[in-house]
Length: 135
Length: 139
Image (tube, rainbow over all chains, first blue to last red; front, side, top):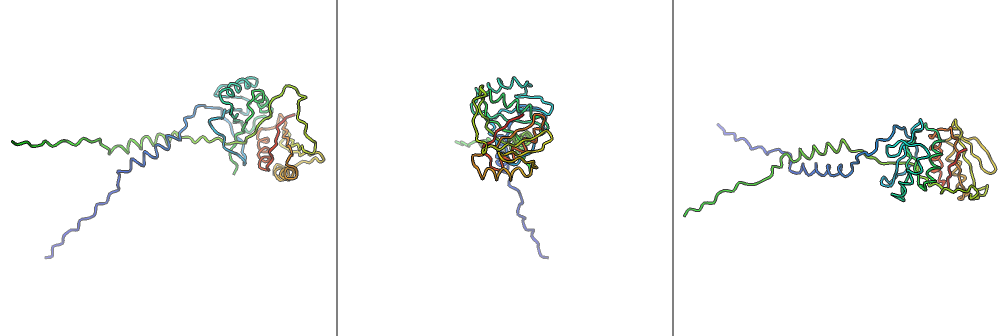
């Protein structure tokens, strides 16, 4: 009888040694890019626009305006005349501050106009109207 | 003399569970990450002046008014014409005006009772049309 010797099968293994490297690489990426949300803000539906540009986050101060006319900066609900001193304080902290409006699309323009006037008084002249990209 | 060396036990950190730990952390950051990229329409406001008389005089032919009423209807007013237009026409009209006169100042006048959305839509169209001198005002 012929002796049939079994061939030794090559071991099939996925190399797992570099697995942790990959995981750590991804981990590092997410750690760096993570922003823990500091403010809760108000519930708003942003309007849509096409020609939008990025706003540098480290210079921005977000002003929330809801459709019922509620204004909030740094999770602090304020009235229109108070906008001036709040923004003045922000301006003293950072001269390049950009006032970012997160205004509900159905809000009255009158409130916005009043706030813009307050911003002019506070000397924070760079503003940005946040919007979603219109496709 | 029989000096037999003792076999040293290999000291090693077990690395098998390293990837587990890494993936655990990874999942945590994956779920908490929020790409908070802010995007919006930028604008620079004019400085505040107490005296109303201290106004910049603009020649009439260099000024175009875009009026928005509370219904969102748009009126385009130049020094020699007044016309009611649709929002879709605004970009082309303004582009033509700015092309013809680079000094053109566009004054966007929105009704106080008008929705913010209309103003943003118009501002977007104006900026798309290449208008650089835009002023915001209300009635």
